[in-house]
Image 1: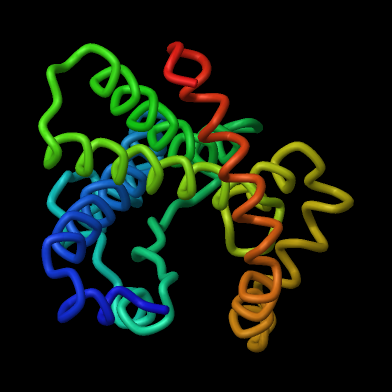
Image 2 (image 1 turned 180 degrees about the vertical axis):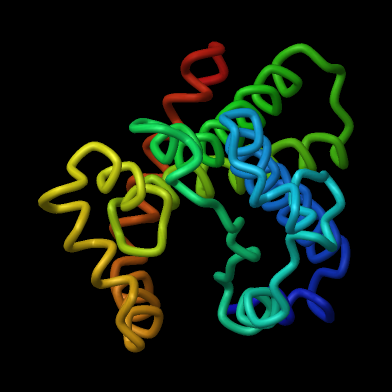
Length: 205
């Protein structure tokens, strides 16, 4: 079920989730762009992606999918691996999920140490959950996700090449969406476990 269903049933939850998602996805894509830029690749800066402006990272179709189906995506950051050396793509791919894990840890720390109202508790738990989901989900070694780019950087001549060739196929996007849809129970279980680890790390569970 997409976010659109919350507009009438729970408008406050809709606003909190929408804002948290927009900001979290923006930081995720900015982390990719900033890392590539720092490693010597001018491609993201030329594309106007080394910015925290959410509009620069918005993908219209990904946003519509999020509203309707409950999962979506931001606009991928263009990079040129040839400008970054042997391990450049690994660090660029990992930067996005790492940024989301850092946001999740920050939200958990605020939950522990701030005096909370019902609203701040709702906001922080939403930010925590969304960023754990984004981090874990993007680390899955599924083509088109950051995890596959990490695998491709580690094994460029074997599995990595196969993953990259798959991404070039015209049907790859649809197939990945089907895999994600069918694997939602497993993905939810993994993200729930990681969220528990984050909370346990700071003594909230």
